[in-house]
Structure formats: C-alpha cells, structure tokens
Image (cartoon, rainbow, N blue to C red):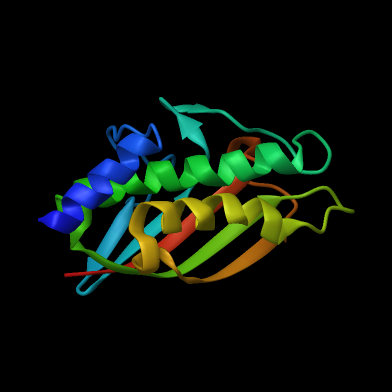
Length: 156
C-alpha cells in the first residue's frame, strides 16, 4: 500500500488528476488483459474527449508541444490502467512503448518528442517506469493527432 501512496503523491505533485479513460474511436477495445500483461491500444493526446495537439510536429506543432502531446497520451493511459487494474500499485513494470509521431518530412527529433511520454512514466512509477521503446515517424494519425502512444504493461 505504501507504493500506491507514493504513486498518488507523485500524481498530486505533478498536478495530475485521473479521470475516466478515453473511449475508443473505432471498432476495438482500449486494452486487452493477458496476465501478467496489459496491452494498451494507441491513444492520442485528447483532453475531455477533444484532441489537444493536432498537426505535423516540426511544421504545425513545435517539438516542445509534441513533448506535451506525448505526455498527455500517458495521462490518458494512466486513466485506462487505473480502470483496468483497479489501482496503479498493481503495475510491476512498463515493458514496451511504441510512439508514433505525425512528423514533417524533415523532422528527425522523434526521440525528443517521445521523451514526453517516457519522462512521465518514470516520474510516476520510478524504476518501474523505465521501458523499451520505438519512436516512429508517420505521415498521418487519426484525427490529425500529433502523437499516438501504445503501451505494454506488466502487472500483478
């Protein structure tokens, strides 16, 4: 229970309030549980159901805004993890992240953008938040989103 308190304290310190998980925008589920793994579908940087960061990073969206977009994707994943697991203290580790960046053709700082997601996972979960990842530049994302992130989480 002490770890849960630590996670709650970290979320409070980061001024993050968990809400209901985002609803899928297509014919899929937000997660699949195959114990001890939770596979989280890709999410975009929506806030209250509205896409907050839209456009190509390096053209319409700055690298810094892309970082914030990736961070918002993780906040959305935290909402889903909380709903799926009942509490974030069940997270043993973040295994793998795949980040898709809607990038301008000459934008190559994809890892810097995806650090917004990685940094937040480590801030929330500490060593449990360290993960493998891929940062992938794409021509388009759903709704014109700047970033989409999916996760694989190990839980107990």
